[in-house]
Length: 200
Image (tube, rainbow, N blue to C red; front, side, top):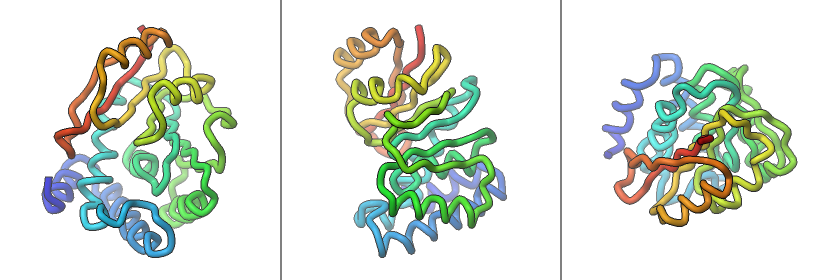
């Protein structure tokens, strides 16, 4: 997916107001990336395809799951900020690095996102009851399930973008936690996938 295709895809999948906010947030990320490494330098010129569409593609997978969206290890705001802009409902972002939290809070304020919150913490120390939990490139699935289990209910859906997936290992991990899973192909990278976990 080229940048032009990614921008066009985004326009088709969000309303005009959300698109303007996403565009403004992308500009904030580009400016802040000069001061701290929010996204890898190699992905700056592909921010729409590598980060925006990569985040937005999670929304259809969350349909039917209600309540707060918890994004673990939000980093530069992907997918948490994009979800907060595009989705009705509360989004709570958890990020342990202070400078990133300060940037995210500034972006929340500038974009007037009244359904978004960012917390300076590791997820183990956060008390949130989440209907959807996402984590992009953060820890192993086993460690994520252990760390954030206290935030989940029997109806929580886990959306976990990954690279390649060992399905046998995933099946064992899911079974140990009383979950079932399926794997979706990423729209943005042929070698990447999204693991969807929920209660049996």
